[in-house]
Length: 111
Length: 111
Image (cartoon, rainbow over all chains, first blue to last red; front, side):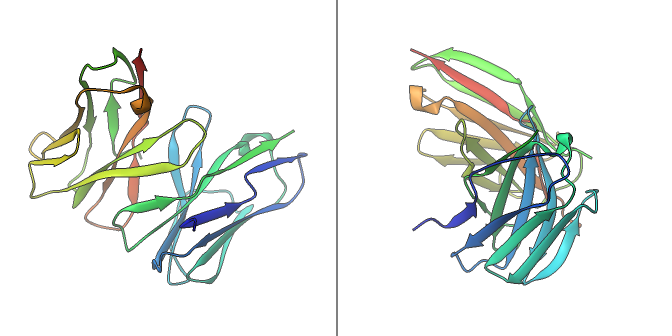
């Protein structure tokens, strides 16, 4: 069973559209994260939730809205997609700042 | 702001040789981690070293930590083709739970 799974794996969409990426972890971890990896492979944290509570919110446009219905799920909704949003988005989970377990990534291409 | 910086950015070595990557960081930490990312995949945790440890081994991996110099090194001995990947160091800051990744070292093992 996949520990951290995110869907979809690939997402191709037009500018201005709204899209969501889903993430689920079955590790029983309290903390979940969203990262963005750009074309230069730089991995930057976007959000972190601990037990459904937002604890890290980096300088991310408010077009990005995370939602955590329970501690095993952290979804990312993006409004009004822009070209610069094209990247690979990774979900991860950990037991409060320790080792992070990553999903396989969602490659978002905005045309 | 970025915490960890890996050096070199890219490294090509012959199979069987040892590979050494370095990571420097800016603020005091609780622990430092190394991750591997194969092309098109998520990051996989390799090893964690705590701030009160100086050296740690795991199989062919050896990690050192020098908190006075705010630096760490990852040594992969007897490299194999399967070691071709990007390697990232990640540091937490002891004032919060945020983990910050460096830009990574791209390692290429030549046959």
